[in-house]
Length: 124
Image (tube, rainbow, N blue to C red; front, side, top):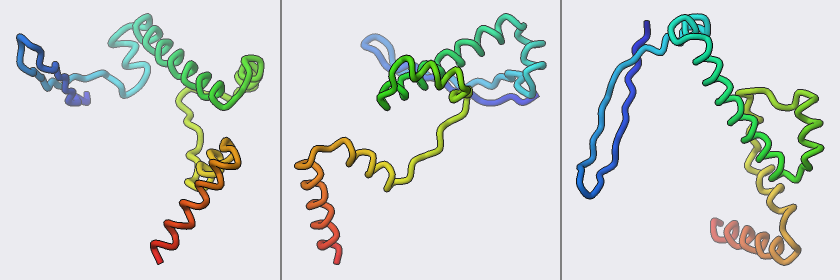
């Protein structure tokens, strides 16, 4: 049994000072089987489903921000593009800059390039 420490804080209010408690608790998270034995299948299934729904909604929001249509999102979902708990690979700094530059109009891009040149010259 692994008992980990967890802390909870209650911020101060007008009539109460800040409070906190540190407790140790064993979630029996050695395996799904031990968690199910300890908490019951219904509880584990419910909590897992909640977490899955939140993850899927986050993925959908990301796809919408990227410009995908609802139909595109559904196709990607049906093709297995989303997997629970699987984060996308991190973009490199230069890829992030290029992605942002693609969204800029000509004047914004020119101003950015000017700032970059000025900063590089200042470092020399």
